[in-house]
Amino acid sequence: MQQQATPDALETVTIPVKKKRRRSKKEDKPKEIPRYNVILWNDDEHSYEYVIIMLNQLFGYPVEKGFQLADTVDKQGKAIVLTTTLEHAEFKRDQIHAFGSDVLIQNCVGSMSASIEKV
Image (cartoon, rainbow, N blue to C red; front, side, top):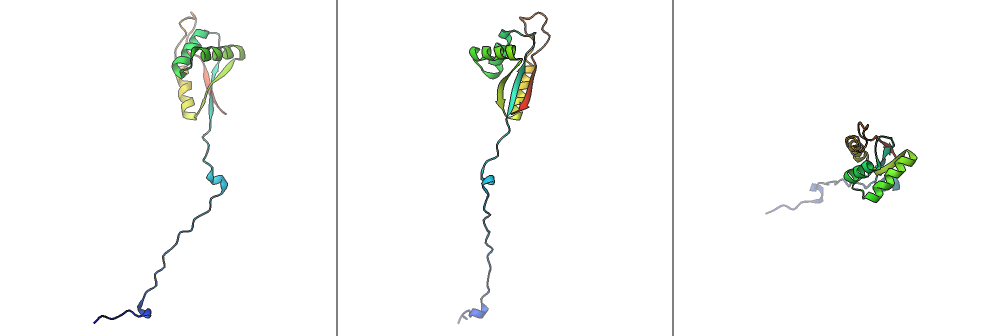
């Protein structure tokens, strides 16, 4: 014969309930990744052709866009050639610095100058 459990013999078990924390509107927005400009600086040691070829090879810009940026660099002293993440901006700046000298300019001794700045 089996004994039946009486109410006094039953144990009470408490199951913890996780409370959901309400997020603020600020937390709901994804964090924006900071953007950086890659700036190409003017000098007298590089031709328009060099700038156009470099921008095509490093950035994939067509001749027309390369010419437009070369003209901006020449007339304004600098041009923003790309806006991107910090790591990508550093990579592109370093590629510009490593591109080499302009074979069309006899006294050219190196690559163009570029820098990055936070947008």
